[in-house]
Image 1: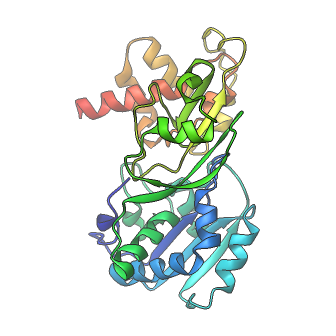
Image 2: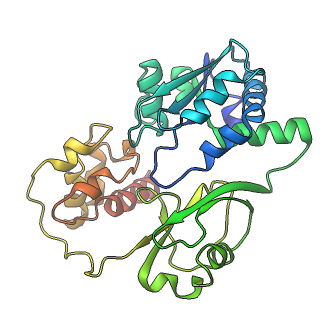
Length: 299
């Protein structure tokens, strides 16, 4: 949730605005529905963002598993030549800013830098829509579209939800009044199953950055006990940023979180790929988050 006004007033020259419509996380579908049902509003929001940021070119990036959104964006009568719709292959975690910039423009964002350091500003489809609502209709960001989906959801779908709506109220509707006991057998994540934040209580609420809530049934057998790293290299092969995640788990286990800095832990985008493929059940993303927090405290 990087402030939009900062993104649209970059301290360095920017030549390209990217509208991120990839939405590569499983289950999530809110951006897709916005591009389909509010196409002209998204286009108009993009045009406003171009004007504010004083940029001449915009790219709306959409993955090829969203054919209706692609068609509507390309057929929109409002879309000027300065706004290009680029179709990308469906691949996780393509929606990450740095990866998207590399894929579209071939530019590498240096460690510790921001997209505007390579002449790019990236905003989400929902942000472009919110800009249009604020400028053209005077409507502040008091609600947003969220996806509720996952295992055994009685009423899955996309919903307009007010900012501040308790998660329990949303699940009470979508789970057919089983919200009170959902945490006993299911994991509830704010976001997608890969990068979503686990909800330990249901008193949390919808925030501006909430793209949805994913409900995942826990396995009958609890997660296997963490074992020692066998240096199989699967986490290295899976990392989209080219890092070596095995060293992050090792650094934390040895009680030396500072050592993770030499393996560029701050470049990690926390996509969860390394955690997912690890045969030893090492919670690598948890280790990475702790080491990032340590690095920020000691900086």
